[in-house]
Length: 416
Image 1: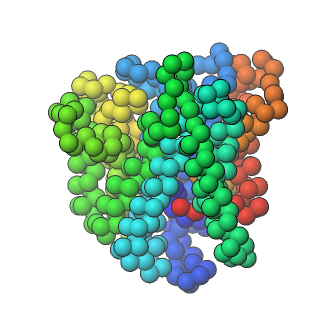
Image 2 (image 1 turned 120 degrees about the horizontal axis):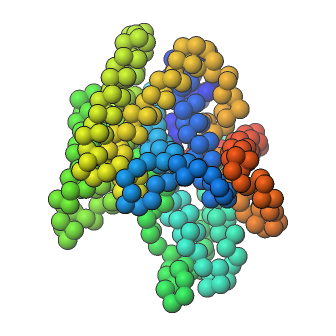
């Protein structure tokens, strides 16, 4: 899910070398940090359901309501950062000698992996323990364990036989889970199905389209700009109801046809090209001015489009696309000046694993929640109420990053 970008170079843009090919690799510290901050924030807001008596603006704004909460900013920021990383990921694979076909294959397989993970995790939301004959708390950790067995980057010393045994074991577990699964309530029992694809699945669809455009554009700024504009317009067209519901075009997944999610990712790709150009020229002031102007334009577009479709995450509106893109650019710019220009990247070392092993970090809470249920751990009310509860959720997010760091040191790192 994340481009392999180093977390610790001393300056904003540096080069290392791939250990296997001795090929130079571009590295950007601030991208990893912004990704790490976003993941920590995602774990934090996802834990708010365990709390009570907390400010409403921290959560999601309800369906049909015009507005935005803190939780509504996190997912689009992550989509934007996926796009921000894409040109670096593609360029680095080209430097290693990957052909166009290999790049396409990589994008497709990575997207497929994210779709599989998303579908299994979203089915856990409607899991019926009694109908399935399995404890509800087991579903998510078994799924996540299977993901790790299948997509872990095993050391060369592990041996091919052991690696494929573990991967096949993971596949078998997923197949068995899909077969025995039953969800829903009462008389409305349903079998395993894609449902709404889940967060990882939505990222997978947006990544698929944006990744292919990035590969075939070969860093052509105007092609990327055209792609971003196209999906922004498609977002408005879709929200206007101009695409007939009985049209054959509706076979395209909503995550793509709706335009908004892919527009967020393409905005990240566009910003990345702008960033690369000015960094190569060593014009940080010009970069800052351009990105500030771009953010101002995006905020203006959000204001202009809001009266038509509202500002809503659940509605995936165009105003939400523009506003969250602006927020992410501004956050990235601030981190760039702190970490890359100011040389203060070490300030963020505590959350480093969330930026370098992001997908693994995303899965860790599922294990911790399952452990809490399995051992009947219940925190006293004082720790899940108000400000104390918010501190608890923040510490939980940091715990997840620490556990991720331990798993990395133990040899686990998902490679998609």
